[in-house]
Amino acid sequence: MKLELLGKPEGCKLLRVTIEAAPPHSDTSGAEPPLSPVWRVTHIQIRGDFFAIPEEAFDEIEQRLASAALTELGQRFDSLVQELGLECAGITGTGLQSLTDEALARLTAAIKE
Amino acid sequence: MGFPFRVLKTGLAPAAWNMGMDEAILHQVAAGAALPTLRVYGWQPPAISIGYFQGLDEEVDREACCRAGVDIVRRITGGGAVFHHQEVTYSIVLPLSHPLARPNILDSYRVLCSGIVSGLASLGIAAEFAPINDIVAGGRKISGNAQTRKENCILQHGTILLDVDVDLMFSLLKVPQEKARGKLIEDIKARVTSVRQCLGKEGADFDRVAHAILDGFAKALDLELIEAAPTESELEMAGLLAAQKFGSPEWTAHR
Image 1: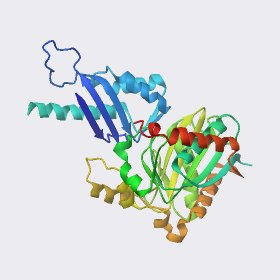
Image 2: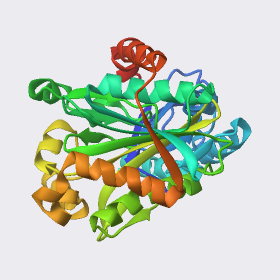
Image 3: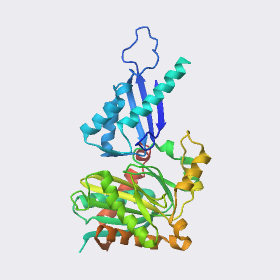
Image 4: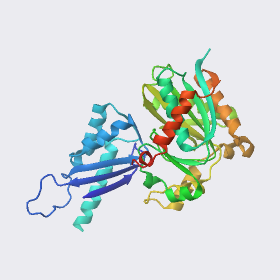
């Protein structure tokens, strides 16, 4: 499933995030289970007018966010920023998580309806 | 005696060359082949630059730019899309080991932007730094700035708006779907100002403002300005970078 997130969470510049996510375990029945917070990122691209230095290292952050659960995206982002020694302005793990949570809540509500 | 800084006045140039020259200066300063450098320049034809992390097709109406003869270029710095039309643009490059360099991005913006604030003050415009990377006059944005660090150097470039045509700008830029176009344009008109709006048409002369900005940097940062021309090596590198990097569709559309 593909999620397109757009927003300006507190402490962040405008963020646009594309997330492809999948259930953590393959379902032998072949039917895709409904989206839930335990789904994991298979691909992510984060765009926007934020700053992250060195810029080139941001690609590695995106690559290494693949496999993160949707609920731990923000925390994983912050850990990677620290591990790779990036300095960011206008983007935070908290902001990223808040955008993701909002999108999940919207989609979950839509599925229930 | 202040800190010696080379000054380059490179006039109006196409977008890819302008970005190539900023990067060429960075390489030269990093190699110790040039003094820390302050450059003022403009754009001909007008151009839109997008930030390193922005999605090209989400930000820019490429067809509209093509019709209007407006260049598009991706910067090596983050930040947002900028319509370079009626403005003075500057870049400043200094080693991280320089006494004016700050390790932290926000502190660094604050220090370097003080040059713009000082230059605007000398023109009679009371402005102040507005974190993360803006300068405002009367609460309205008059200057946007973007910074990166590479090869143990800081590069910051930014704009001082001489005049602003928000309607033209938004005929070239795309607007997030969440916000009505008309409302956004009205919001931006209320949040942006220019030298012309502050001082009138005569005050918004490119050379006058560029001169004031250079003086502002000299005063605020205690610089000894040494006017020079780009080196042969910089000119050659800027041309190569313009052709092979900043002018290439792969770079421009990489996000």
